[in-house]
Length: 193
Image 1 (spheres, rainbow, N blue to C red):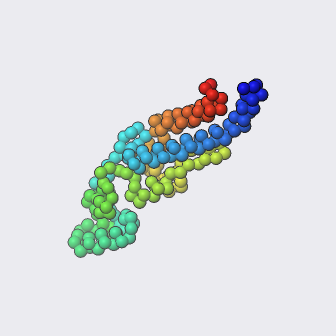
Image 2: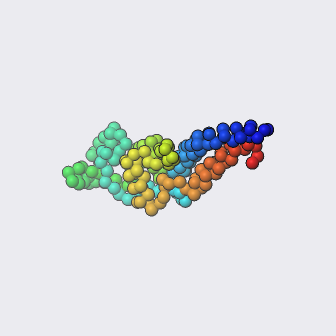
Image 3: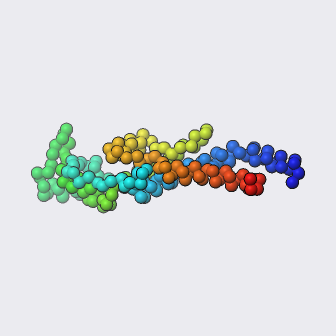
């Protein structure tokens, strides 16, 4: 290869370098989002690999808005009115029912799993609670909106766990991806350097 050909090859690589970096960081960010969602919603783990916890069995007050859908609430409360009058309470003008088995029982009533916390009561947080911000030199995984942020950070605060952050392993994986991709492109452009 002539010196001019090598110079042309180098100039072409440099001209496309910004796009390579942007595309690589975008891919790494999207991979990171997938990894975080898999860990949190699939494996039910915090950033240190610990489980998110168990559902509360402490008696709790519930109303119609505690249920995922109105039909389920109506069915449950109609059945309760017929048998257990002593479990009703009025709080700030709202007629509420004392559920002895706590939030775990509320999930059971609605056919949700109760083995461990999965943060998927309404599935909103798992489906659309996390997103990415990519562009203008910014590459980050973030909450999609304030409601999701309040749910996620509220859970972390109540449980004393870091959940919606990248774990050390996930950070290393993203960094490794970026390094391997860029070195791979260098090798493709210039051979083994």
